[in-house]
Length: 384
Ligand SMILES: [Mg+2]
Image 1 (spheres, helix red, strand yellow):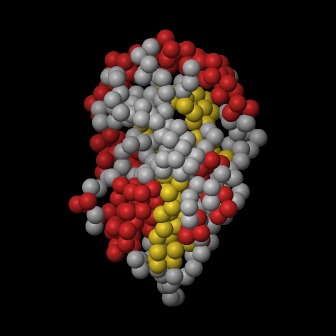
Image 2 (cartoon, helix red, strand yellow):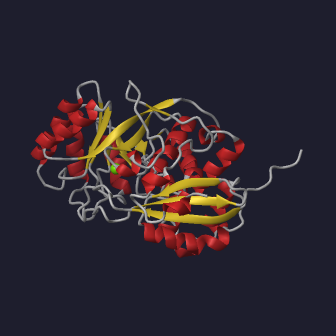
Image 3 (tube, protein in one colour):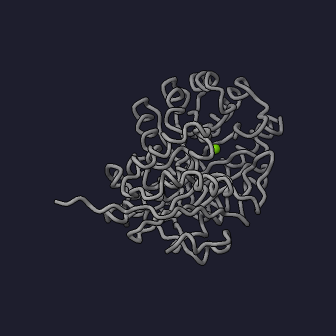
């Protein structure tokens, strides 16, 4: 038997998304014209094109793709893990874990897409097997003052969502624990007793004002509202405090969205800092890295829920990982055009509020050139 001919990479394109960038609840708030995501296309000599997504400023991604060119040019896109590891191993001296790692994530996702198309299999199956055909998306929205919070959750509940996460905004930042509780109460009442509700303090934001004792008090309060996890309750480098918080909190502790590279996750998993780890496939190093982090988490008894929620392609990668890792949730940003407005066939909830996991080859989604034209100046470069 002859080996399959390689799908040699002839170009990698990075297209920044901007124009309708959604708010992040950050203290230095994102403006619609800011680019915080880029779409990647890996073009191969055989004509197959894979797509991926990166969560960082599009200008940085374009520069990184250029810097990495001698390493990816002519490589075989059918070997995503090896090629991605080659990109990591040869760029350690340029600030590993930062922009280059983020950009490599998008290239890796796109190579898995190519491999799936050539193999005729969905990426989830290539990752080892398909445990599920659908997964529950939790609708992720920013915290608002209580009355507005009620309206926001009610709106998404009416769209069919049965799980919600509220985060950032005034929670903790307003230095008002009564307001914090009123927001959570409003969200729980609007979501209904049967819905899942998660709370994200967003302590990776600049100059987070609280420490361990605030987090413990907040966790005790959240228990009263049947909150499924408390996310980023501490500054993102406070490993020892996370370990202590997990021991003392009555609600599960989640985090890890700002960590990148599997090596960085290891002490957090080994020390027991999280009940749920949330690596971002569009930042950590792509699908190749994410699955290693997720498997390691399972071995340490830590649940894995992906954070690739920011674009339709990040979500598509999360869905494939969810079936291969048998994850019961994916994050889904509420009302973002970069998730709802990029695909030929947008994601749609079924009657139970779940998302079907695409079962067609590759990532199983198709970008719309026409729709992308609203958010990037040269969408054609992402296609043949
Ligand atoms: Mg978060």
